[in-house]
Image 1 (cartoon, rainbow, N blue to C red):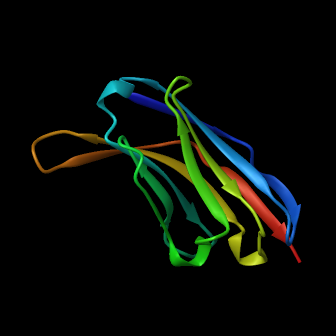
Image 2: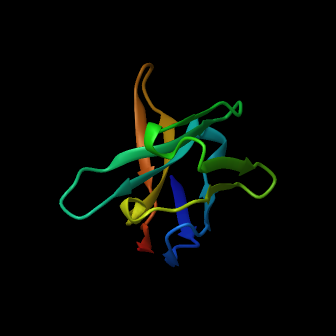
Length: 120
């Protein structure tokens, strides 16, 4: 079992910045990769940024150059630094951890979500 607790969401004006944090606990040694997803009202949940246990990162095209994902292994925490925020970034942001189960299969753990609202 892996528990994920997010923090750092809020209301910000367009052009502003926020930093989200995700603290992991439990069987964290089994985590393969972590990431941030977001879901706006009426839309599907989409990947924003991901980071592997080796530190490789990937980003959605819409956030490249504006968002940065990082991890502090000593604190078992993943961060999402969001700069130059736009109203279209408004969504609930979810932390995700992927844990291998049977070979070739991953189980997804999710945090409770944190609201990010960007006003124009």
